[in-house]
Image (cartoon, rainbow, N blue to C red; front, side):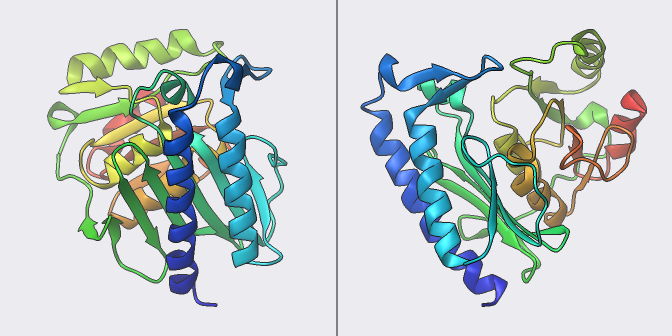
Length: 260
């Protein structure tokens, strides 16, 4: 099966799962919300979304493995692996704040070959794969912005729900960027942050304490849309290394200078 065909069929599975999430959100109450060990939130709908995605995607690609946030989160890099966040932005979701999404990527032989970030409330689907030259927002091709420097830029970031040991350092970066850019936005979903960089709504993104399912699809979106993704040192350990800088490429060195 070619990646184009896989992508088309996976998009159907993901959008149907998004319909499930949207329908179930109306019925969500306190009995469906729990805390994980790191104090982050999880709902019965996160779990239901993941089960639907895992079932559908493994049927699509028999023999593929799963790396997902809730119940399939063994950190195993196999030859063919789906990387899934069933609801990125669960805190937003619990509070009915309309910034949450499904993030799905396909890892094949050491690289991401397909990525989709589906904004469920906004019905915006950002997607790409290795056999196309474009990133699409629904059916429209999109590109990163043309902002030439930090002074012209709008940045996105996030704050960890735990792991606060680096917070002082992080807040220093936040303070600098707040003073030297058009502003900073905190959407509450790293996957959407990256999708927004890919389509030019934001010019750059920085965050730490990230998991592969937060960023795998979004990283491919940024790269295919003409941007650049690195870790804080300018290296390639951004998928499993827990930290990421993403940009339109033009401002990347300025971002790196603050971290490296």
